[in-house]
Amino acid sequence: MSQNKNKIHLPEQTLFNDLSQLIERSKQFVITQANSVMTMLFWNVGKRINEDILQNKRADYGKQIVATLATQLTEKYGNNFEPKNLRRMMQFADKFPDAEIVAPLARQLSWSHFRELIPLKDEKARLYYANEAAERHWGKRELRQSIERKEFERTEIANLQLSEQSPVPFNIFKDPYFLDFLNLPKDFLENDVEEAILKELERFILEMGKGFAFVERQKRMIIDGEDFHLDLLFFHRTLKRLVAIELKLGKFKAKYKGQMELYLKWLNRYERQEGENEPVGLILCTEGSREQIELLEMHKDGIMIAEYWAELPPKQLLEQKIHEIVAETRELFERNKQIKQ
Image 1 (spheres, rainbow, N blue to C red):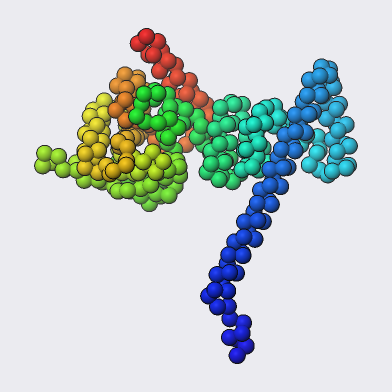
Image 2 (cartoon, helix red, strand yellow):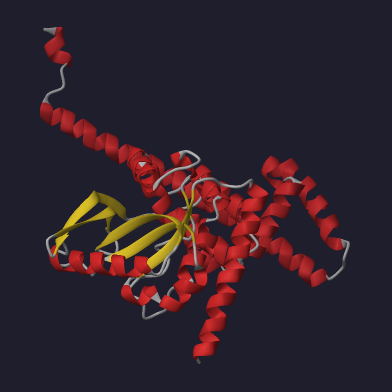
């Protein structure tokens, strides 16, 4: 009898579940609001101190006022206002000077997120990572990893291949792709890469970026009675289009362009469904040929080229190599634009 009394019937269980969800959502809302208010407080504190220092115009005034304020504020409000934290708040207001940008970000990102963003020197990089973290609901750890793996810089390199008239949108692809997590053998073959990607599909999709969904491997196409096989076929949910991926060893070769064009035309005719946009292609090579890529202007045909790195150099060398590639690629594409004009 007592068991029946304590048993929750289906309607009561549904009610309990609904109330639990309401309570959990409210608790999360309170936490989010508290984080947002605290972040905006830190921004306003930093902004106010910066304004005072700017008005005073004495070289030694900044150090003195920060030390004095830190002592007073810490005594009254706690360790959040120690000297190093006040300086960080001042940097925060300096690096993110626009309240209209900070306010909506503060509703989605915590103070810990902004602490990862403040050291970045490039304003575009700061805003890129801030928006990506907000949109993709990254925690501090994911944000830090994205910064360390140079996602902004690699996206920028890929964007340099494109123009406003390109069927391929900006900010979708990267160059190079980091496939170090595949743990490929030293003398790997194309098939080794494909097999490793399928074993680590989730991590590969994370490296590719948001919106990618796996469709098929070795997609068979019969053309003039001959069999052709596309390495990997994905679908991009945001772009609403198929993405054909070919894996190559060694340097990019011009003949890869014709092969990918054939695959894209076949996919467009036989696989594209109503409401979808035309397919695009991505050719991944272990080494790029940047001048060939620029001359062929493959972005006009919906084709992107990118390197993939099976091993990553140490952090300092990685930063150096990525920045060199950004500079070289930008110089190459800008020079050839000027020649065409």
